[in-house]
Structure formats: C-alpha cells, structure tokens
Image 1 (tube, rainbow, N blue to C red):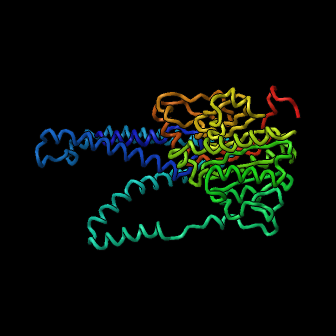
Image 2 (spheres, helix red, strand yellow):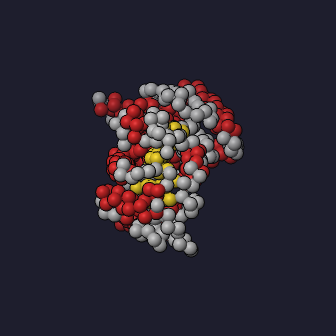
Image 3 (cartoon, one colour):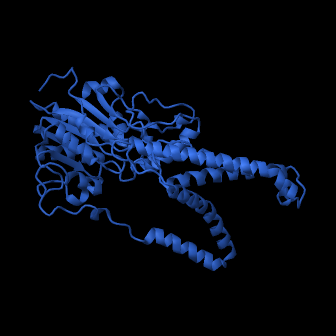
Length: 435
C-alpha cells in the first residue's frame, strides 16, 4: 500500500505545472526520476523493521485475496489522482503552448510520455537481470563494448562545424587573412561569431587556443582591437560569452543595429565546456576573464584622446561573469557607459546602469537552491507566459526539469532572447559627458 501511494504521488508531482512546454521525453525523465526515488524511499522504510528482527521467511500479504480487496480502494484512489494529474497537466501544457504560439499537445503526446516513462523505469532492471544471468565473459565483453563505443567512436570535430569562408573575412574580423589570431584557434563558437554579421562592425574573438594564458589572451585582444580599428569606433562592447564560448548571434546583430555599425565587439573565451558544467565546476572563470579584459580596456582607453564608449553585454553565465567584474552596482554604473544582461542565472546581477532582459518563463532566471524554500521574485521579469504558483521543493524540481528544454522554446520565451539583446542596450550614464 505505501508503494502504491508513493508511486502515485510521484507521478502526480512530476505532472505539476512548469514554466515551459515539455517534450514527452523530458516529462518522462522527470516522472521516472521521481517514481524511482519514491520506490527507493519506500523500500528503505520497509527494510527498517527487518533489521529489528522480522521473522525469516515472512511473506508479504499481497497475494491474499482479502488483502487485495483491502487495497482496491487505495489503487482506485491513486489511479483517479493520476488521471486528474494528467488532465491538469494537459490543460496547463496547452495553456503554455497557446501563449507561446506552438503546437498543442495531443493525446499521442501523453501516450508517448507513458511509454517512455515505463521504458525508463523497466530498462535498467532488465539490463541488470540480463547481466546477472549472462556468463561472466559475455557480460564483461558487452560492458567493454559499450565503453569503447562511448570513448572511441569519433564525434564531429569542432573545426568542421563552421567552415573557413570561401572569401577572406574583412580585416575587421579576428581569424581573417590580416589577423594575428589564426582561424583554427578561435574554436567553433568563435568562428561562428566572426563569420556572421555586417562587414562594417569590428568583431574580435580570442579563443582558448589563441594564446597560452589569460594575460596573453588579454594582450592579444588589445592588439587585435588596435589592428582592426576597433579603438577608433564610437562604441566598444565587451561581450562575455557563455561557458562554451558561445555568443548569441541575435545579440551581436542587435548591437550592430543599435549602434548603426559604428561598434567594435570583443570577446574572450574562458571555457569550452557547456555552461552548466562551468557553472557547477568553476563559475568564477567567467568573472575572472571578464575582469582581466575590462581592466585592460579601461587602461588602454584612458590613454586615448577620444576613446570609444565602453559597454558590457552578457547572456546566462556571461551575464554573471560580466556583472561579477564589479564589487557593487554603483561601481558598475560608474565604470561603464551601459550594460545589458540577458537571462541571468537566478536573476542575480547588478542592475544600476544596466538593462536586464529576463523572461518570466526562463528557468535559468528562476533556478537556484533558494527555490527549495523561497518563491522567486518575478517583479523584474517580463510576463511572456503564465507562471505556475510556487510550491516548496516541487517548484525546484519542476524548474530543474525545465532547464533541459530552456533553449527549445520559441524566440522571446524560455532562455531564448533575440536581437533586443542589442537594440535594448542603454545610453551612456548621466555622469558621462556625450562624445
């Protein structure tokens, strides 16, 4: 009986309202995880009396007809609760899809969810049983084959993701024929950044392989800005990439539009790992890298008779890194012309002198350990879609699941921001005289 109740509760909890439309697989992963935790918890609790001296050979009473009859109301109640949960989830999911102008979820969506959930729960059990029954050599061979497949099968190489342009890049770009930064050192994200956009704007990108140390990469960035004429532009934007080195193409184009092409953008890669890995293992890398480049730019600009205005831009971990340059909001406002932060994790950035773009449906903006016991502050988010009521613990789990599909939402929802990342950049603070 406890197992039935725990399983039903886990299924219903997994179907609670989230921030984003979910695929059947994402929903199945959350449901299977909660059910597995519920089953593990009930098994641990049931094992406790045995340690206290339960009679050997004692059998559960599940096979007894009277016991089955006693459990029937619990089974019926649990099934009804799951049915209500599924109905409510279907309504909520379609409410989100309507708000985001996406295709409604059909009954096939939920049938696939149920199938995938069952598969995720039963497959590990079947695999373990198969390995136990198989001859030892066969089991070891299968395990070795699986490891070799993961380790040895080549993945697409980063250099192939963006081919070298057929015609040389303009001199205003890193990686061009004229550049001191070789094309193949930019990394996949750097090549995408410099190969896109208007030829009028300057785009400088320094990859991890472009120089051996952070100080060397900063010095190289300054030389590239000098070579490209970036220091002679009216506006200079330090763009802090995400953990993988990615910079949103929409933001870069928006900045070109905002400043009518009279802009230089410079970025310094600090990691090649996915943003979430960098966020967990070393989030300070983003701030350290951004601070080193920002400080060097300040010093260089102070020597120029007519320096460009200095701006900051960052999305996601890049927003945290850019904001982390400064000890407080007042220092940020004093030392920058303006800043723009898009989708900052936990919405935790300095706001003075900055424009902050935070979709209400963006799980990156909501998620933090504090969400376990405290409701998020939605007053600074833009209401792009309905938001569920906060529930202790449950909202933390639901938001964590939504992180898996944060970039799958349509533009303007979830963790997807468009050209307004650039066009919404503010003007120089009042303490700066117009150039």
